[in-house]
Image (cartoon, rainbow, N blue to C red; front, top):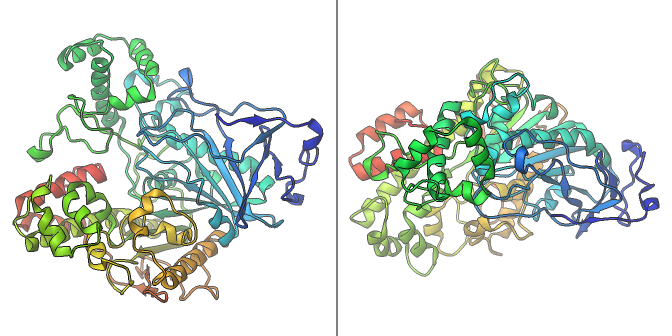
Length: 605
C-alpha cells in the first residue's frame, strides 16, 4: 500500500480552491489538490515533475471483485506520491492495482496536451512504466498519465453465475473490468488534469501491444467516447469475443480450481460437482479464490503451463498442439455495453477520432523466441556466426524440426512472413482502411517501424544474427516514439538494447527525435492533423481511401532514413492462406496454425 503522509492543514491552503488555469508549479511545493485529496509529487532530474501512485479507484476486494470500479476513498492532509504503486510480475498481477501516475514538464505552462498511455503485457502482466515516462513529458511537452488496471482473470472474466441480466448491472455483467478501469482513469483525468496543467479538451489515448488493443476496443465504446479525443495505437491486434467463449474458458478454469482446492479428486468428479452447484455457490467460490489460485485455474489439467491466450481445446487443432481441458485467457468481450457487438471500425460500430496506428516490420520474431530457443540463444551470445548458431541448435527445437541450416532459414523466414503479415493486416492495414472508408473526414496516419530490419548497416556486433532473429520486432518502436535513448529502458527492451552502442547512437537518437516530433505534433494538434515542423524530416501524409500510404521509420548508424511508402503493406489473409496451403513442410504449417490461434485468438484457417 502507498503511504499517506499528513502535514499541517495550513500546508495545503495554497492548493485548495485554486483556479486550474492559474496553477503555479514550484519545486518547493509540488502539491496538487485532486477531487479526493491533496498529493505531493517529486522531481525527476531535469526531465519532469511526477506524482506517482495516485489512487483512482477503490481497491476491488471481496464483493467488489468483478464489478465496475468505484471512486477511491478521500483522504485528509497530503498524500506523498513519490513512488509507483505496488507491482507484481506474476501473471494476473495483484488485485489492488487502481493507481495512476502523472508527469509534466518542469515549467509553469498550462493547458498542455494530455497523453494517457495504456501499458501492454498481454493483459496478463506489467504495469504503467513509471520509471521511463518522464522523458515523454519533457520531449513532447505534454502531461503524461499512465495507470495500472486489473489484468488476467481479475480484469477479464465472465461466468453465467456472475451475470444477473438485471437493468443497471450491464457494466458488472460485461466481463470487461480492465477496460472499465481504463475508462475510470479517463474520468479521473477529466476531473483532475487541469490541476496538473493539462488540457482536458485535448486528451490522446495511446497504447502498445495489448494496451493498443484495449485502445482499439475503447474506440468502440460509448462509455469511453466522451473522455478522449485522439488515439495512438502501436502494434494493436483488435479482438473481442462473445460471452459464450468466455463462459467456456471460465468453466474449464472452475474445474481446475475445484481440483486445486481439494474439493474434487479428479477433473471428472469436478465437472459433476460443478454441475450440481448453484449460481450463488459458484460466485462465492470464485470470489474466495486468491489471485494466485485463479491463475492456477488457467493451467492445463495436469497443473503444467500457465495462463495464456488461445483456445487449444478444439478438435481441428494440430494434434501436437491440442491442449484438452486447458482454459484460454480471453480479453475483450463484445457485450454491446462496454464494447460494440462488432469490433471492425465499420460505420456505426466505432466512435471516430483522429488516429495514429502502425506495426513493426518483423512483429512476430519476438514471440517465436521460446519455440526456437536453442538456436536463438546461440545467436544472441554474439561469439558465433549465424549459421553456426543455427547448426548447433538444430537438435534443440521444441516445436519444428529442421534438418539443415538452409531449411531452418527458409522455414524461419516463412513463419515470420506469414505471422507478421497477418498481424500487420489486422493491426494496421485493415483497420486503417475501415476507418477512412467509414469516416473519411477523420485523419488516419499509418506507420511501419523498420529500424533494425536490415535496410542499413547499424554498426553493432553480430548484426546478421540480430537481423535474422529479431529485426524490427514487436514493441521495438516504443523506445523511439518515447525517446528512451538516454535512460535505462524497461527490461523487456533487453534484446533491442544489446544492439545500441556509441557507433550507432547518432542514427538512433536522430530517429528517436524525429519520431517524438511526429508524436508531439499529433498530441498538440487540435484537429489531429500532423503538420510538418522543422524537426520532422518529411511530411507524414495521411492514409486515405484514395491514397493508401504509410511512413517508414528507419535510420542508418548516422542519420534518419524516413520515407513515405505507397506500396501494399502485406498480402491479404486469403492470399496468405493459399500460400500456407501450398507450403511443403507440414510441421511448419502446423506451427503457424498453432501460433495464429495463440497470438490472434481466432481459428483463422
